Image 1 (tube, rainbow, N blue to C red):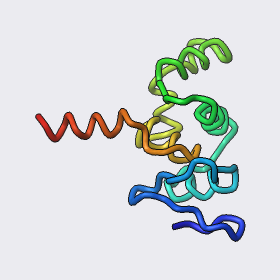
Image 2: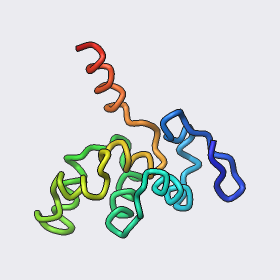
Image 3: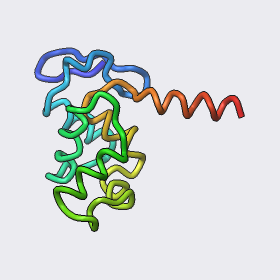
Image 4: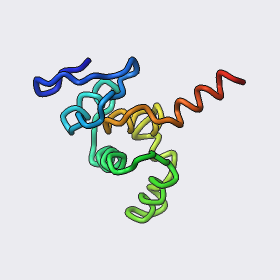
Length: 113
């Protein structure tokens, strides 16, 4: 549970929101701080991109970054510099999304192996 603007926000045990309708920028800043990330305009661009995607896909993000900024920015390495513990994990968490299903599937596959 996290308190934002005097509102209690329910989170799972990993810090993902249970109700994405509660997300806002002040909450994103608090989550980013807990992830040891200082939000810059580059972070906000990706966080805001996440807010408009139903399924976060790195490929789609890279295509969008390439169109907006050119191929030098549209790399996994660039995204990793912004979100060192993973685009799916950190960007989605900061954007106030539920834990991405792909992360759950990757975990399950790892457990089955």
